[in-house]
Image 1 (cartoon, rainbow, N blue to C red):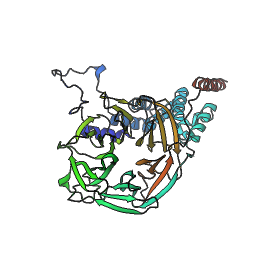
Image 2: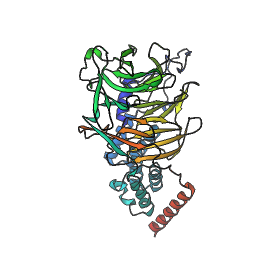
Image 3: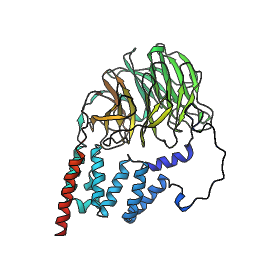
Image 4: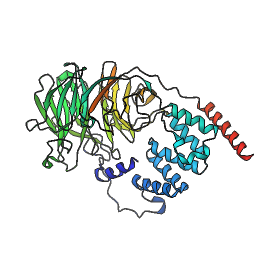
Length: 468
């Protein structure tokens, strides 16, 4: 369960807002002595504690206790499929069929695909017409759909991939690696040339974030010291920065170091606007840093308490919206001008769990969603204000070659992405696939009233048959 990761990281890496224009509580109120907690004010249980409670209840077949713990977990992380499955498990064991059907239907409408026949606790429901109907639809959601083609393969472990960006000036993909700290120029026929490598002169380590600003002829690289880098030294622990190079000559121009705060850092994706605002995420802390067009330093822009699985960042060319992905909590939108941030709202048929890539494309976001079944690429159409999602279009679903797709870059009318970036099976081939931005079709929201009436009639029929 994901909460084990969240709880462990949050205990060490939790940060509060501060040091930026978006900081909260600029003027602090006088501190008051803490009040004694009452029974109604008990501290909220951590996700790790709730998961332990759920695991123990499941082992003991204490279904009421499992049901309660799973509901609390679902409330905390509503997109997590694991928690919805545990609710279904407990509800089925308790013969609370309407509850089980409700969560099955929710998962099905979100395009998730899990075979509930593999869950022993549903045995008593499997002959029911309503159960068979919804479970069949969930199975169909896992069928391959959409478009995707293999573009090229590179030798090496996919886990070594840091980031990829399209370089229009070279007509090559630029690929950053973690172990060697290499920047590769890769042609569509698979030929690769090393353009630069991390060394003592440039001061870089693993290359985990890349962005190009053609207007200023700039290549931006985010790099931080980690054991993944072959030349890692413990003396470099907690170091990292944003590095600036001339795009045409790859001449080193500048570096912007992370503040010396004593924290572990892991810089990741970089996003840049037309005017030259640069944003970079820190996956370890978690923080978004900002380098202004005329700035001489990398500043903390906003801290995100509780978002401990940041995966990617994207920005509109005019700097009006900044989009941040978290693998557990989904998408967040930040308005840099109004200095506001909020979860990115969307329709009920959108599950935002397991997003590992987000790219802005015109009026939409293109996401790589590898943490759910089925793995997929989705296009999310934004409203006119760019503050909410209007509709959802699966672009590529469960295609052959999908093995935890990850980082990608938009070139022309397609997105190019490494289809096995997070492959648990390892392997020694890095596979780049392409999917047209216009592939797939928008999900049409079903007539929920009619659908629910149909399910209710089937439930009534089942109950009548049971009473006979």
